Image (cartoon, rainbow, N blue to C red; front, side, top):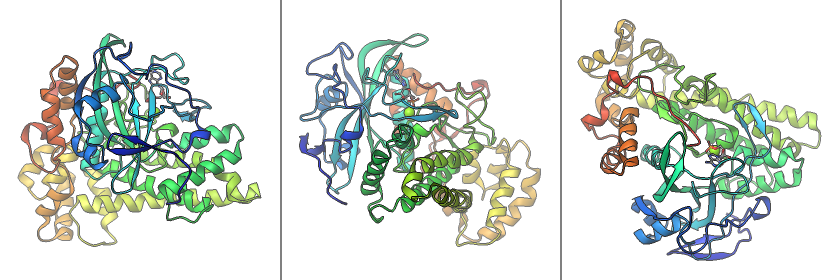
Length: 482
Ligand code: AMP
Ligand code: MG
């Protein structure tokens, strides 16, 4: 990777770097993030610390360091917090200025393996981008992000990670009074499609170019300098694969706004996200998604829509002739559907325990979906080779009678073992997540810790965490920005 300017400053036992995008950020001192206990975190208490992650970053944080640094009670040595500016399309409407309204980027860490990460606090108080908000977050949503992102990591899905959650000791006002918390998040970077849109919307092509150069150096160092078309292609490739992975897990992000799509290809900004239980393509959990824009089956379409917004920002860099540049960009955007489809078929091959490739695999996967409406998404794939266990998952098994023999013929010997290695037994099921978060909000972390342990070993069958929500659980609704 090219060596860009940036002063090395120490951070615990690792190394933190000044954010090298500084010129592009609206860098303002974060007033409350000064030494000593603060109004925002009068009694910080460490709720969860990700020791393996801390070690892999070379930080080896003590509990006291995690508590004080991540609650904003004190600053890690040399850290110079900033809030990042970005724009974004939210539910299709463009906001030229969003930005970190409740997050502070502490700086960068270079892990012992040489990889570079952002460490960001979420829920750490007001910034210049807070608008009417208080900049804070509640224990429940921060622990939800911790759980779901760590599950994604356990499944090998590209994601930001969660390093710690600290309760601030402060009560914050939502619909009711809730305990406040800060999440320490680790990301390959926090560059978003919306970061490109921020400068493009201001007509600052030189900054879009510098941002693209930085993104190439940081996330796509294998690309030639200045090859912005290859950059677009590379982001398309990572995002198409990412959404295919989400679909395989039944994951619904909930708010696929362009400011919530990372240039690195990591899943970012876990808000009102959840996992589908019974297969229903129109599933929506988010309370604010009344139109179903970000419904399960719409996610691949939104992938294309969001990447088109990224391509628009790159048009001035693609060719001196705007007409030609648009043509080039459109050509690449036209490849998204095919690439996503290929990635999805590949994910489904894994989930169906298929070895090698066969021309009929796509149809086999499509036909399973047509037969499994209402059947538990997760368990269906674990139970395919055990018809007695499979049947009760289906409200209507009729179409499976014809499908199963086709699948058996294609899958061949030893498929049971492959199924068990391809699909999780345990996912963060909505009723279990709710149970854990509401207990944690009341001060009892035991259910959260038990659920966390289960989702960190997702292939291990653990009965209480595998069962779908009891019928009394009702329709699940998630809330964001809380
Ligand atoms: P999110 O739903 O986390 O992607 O947030 C969307 C936008 O709203 C981002 O610009 C956030 O920084 C901002 N935001 C969310 N919650 C708050 C809050 N409590 N205070 C200030 N800004 C917020
Ligand atoms: Mg966001």
